[in-house]
Length: 167
Image (cartoon, rainbow, N blue to C red; front, side, top):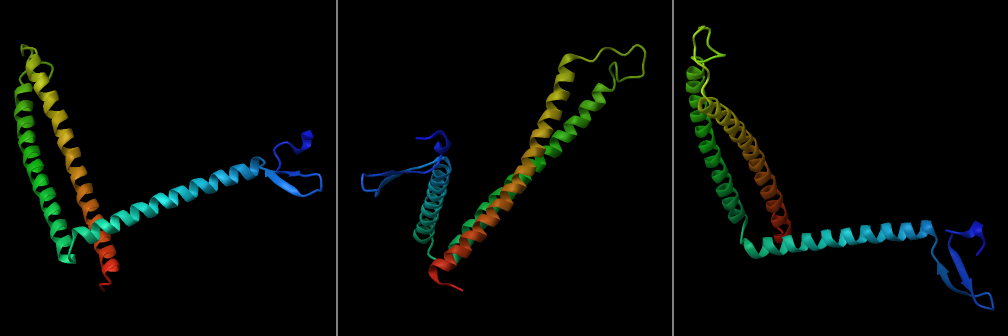
């Protein structure tokens, strides 16, 4: 094959000049691979959609069932949020008490003869602050989960109605 034809589509001919086969060039091969990847992705998405549709039809008898489950999940998340908020309130009180205790020690006290801050007190303060950060992040995650549950169930209700022909 001439060097100028490398990477190009090449037709293999028989003795009568008829095309026996075509050897793919670089661009054709890349386009075929891209098309196959897109087709595989579409096929996977279609299978997931069909599986989701079967699950909706087999799991629920009516829209009220879906709404009931949605409400239960939201209720659970709201309850978890309340518990987390109470824990944060308790931890803030603990932090406040620790700050009062820490204020009696060097370097936080203005008194020249104040004793050095005990390690256990400093450790308690650090642990309390870190725990507060974890619980506050948990609150943010809870809000995101609530929004996700609502949007997922809204989509499920819409699709269920489409599948059942409900308006």
